Every structure is written in structure tokens, then in C-alpha cells.
Length: 122
Image (cartoon, rainbow, N blue to C red; front, side):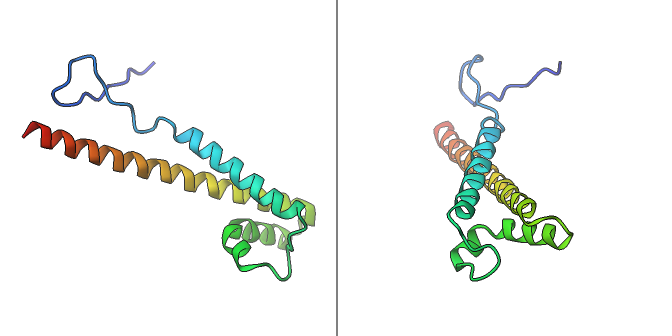
């Protein structure tokens, strides 16, 4: 098993460490996947138009699903299976977006903490 190295803040006792930046990213990605799958499934279950007259907001929100679903349908997959492909594509896109949001949040939080530590050490 590989040993992990802890990140210690300047001026803190030897036992105090900072959390690793990757912590929680998987949870956020899973939440984003669930949100995307639920939203796309609700759109389809509430008789959202899939091929014609799609509202503009749905084109933006479910773009990955429409793209993947249409591509699967063009490859000869049945309509229900292409809808499943579209729903999963929306879930994966939302998972990526929430994971990136988590990384951005950690970067912003780390910068603020580093700036505060620099001000305190001066």
C-alpha cells in the first residue's frame, strides 16, 4: 500500500494537516450523474418531444442526450434504446460538470487559504 503524504500548513503544529483536494469529487460526480439521469428521465416520462419541436431550454439542458440518442438511432439502435443512451449521456455530462465544479471550488478555497496564510505570516 502506498503511503500518503499529508499537506501541512505553515505555522501549524506537526499533527495538523489539510484535506486532500480529491476528497468528495466522486460524491459530487455521482450526485451530478443522478441529477442528470433524473432530469432527462422526467423529461421523457412527461412526454417531452424527442424528435420534433424541442423547446430551446431542453436543447441546451439535454444537448448531450439528444446528440448521443440521435447518433445511436442513426447507427440502427431502436428508439427506446437510443433514449436510454441519451439519458445516460446526460447523466455522464452532468457528472463531469459537477466534478469540474468541485475541483474549481477546491482551487478557489485553496487560493483563499494560501493568501490568508501569506498575510498572516508577513
